Image (cartoon, rainbow, N blue to C red; front, side):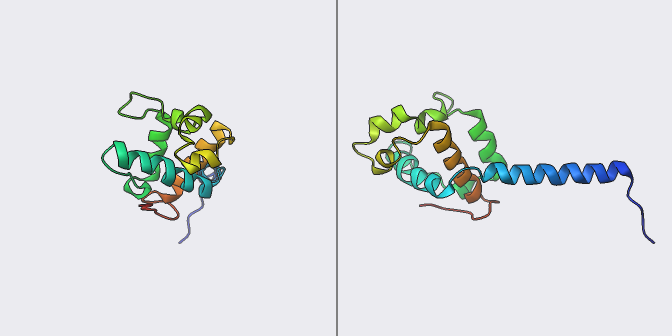
Length: 133
């Protein structure tokens, strides 16, 4: 016995498929390899030195990271997260951090997307969960 799908069900399935494709495309719009290097060499080093230890991407789900990254709050809400990928921040630490020096001229939004792409790819439920430690 087969059931026919109503036009509403077909439309719902199409919309769901389109949103999944759009989500995957959005997550892939950054250079995850550059994001990984920046995260490991800048974020992880700072967290290790100042925040009690590194935070690996695989400690959170993609939804958790997306919410955190979109909220743009860091240090318990005291600072904007995007500050840490800004050219100004990279200029301040490039004398002691080779990744900040290497990516000194990358536009802020592009570097943020790179880090975001790495975080989502390395998330607990991402394509390639990463401990990065």
